[in-house]
Image (cartoon, rainbow, N blue to C red; front, side):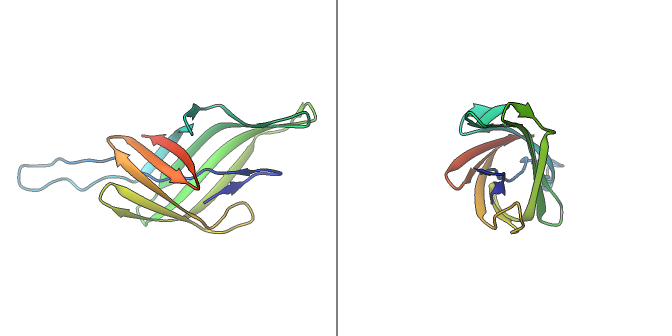
Length: 144
């Protein structure tokens, strides 16, 4: 799924979860993967991350997070600072949503198409508290 920015597209997506086992010796605790997962890097670059910078426009990704809900829906929010022709504007908060499926420690997120978001699919793998997501060729890392 892609969150669109004007005039550029920003690929950001993700999925979720934190692995968990536990409980008594006879029954394992259910995996708790719902909640908020902050974005920590995109293609190895940590935040804040300059997405575009030329003479007329600078876009900087300053913050992001993925929230997984118990009903298999998600919301992804990103905050972008925009400087156009040398003048900063108020930060833009972009939000996309959709549904997800989990199979073991693998997740599939499918975005819902809106004016700001593409209806694409991203996949991720959870190891410990780190979820690594591949979205249209970009690697996003979320950590809870």
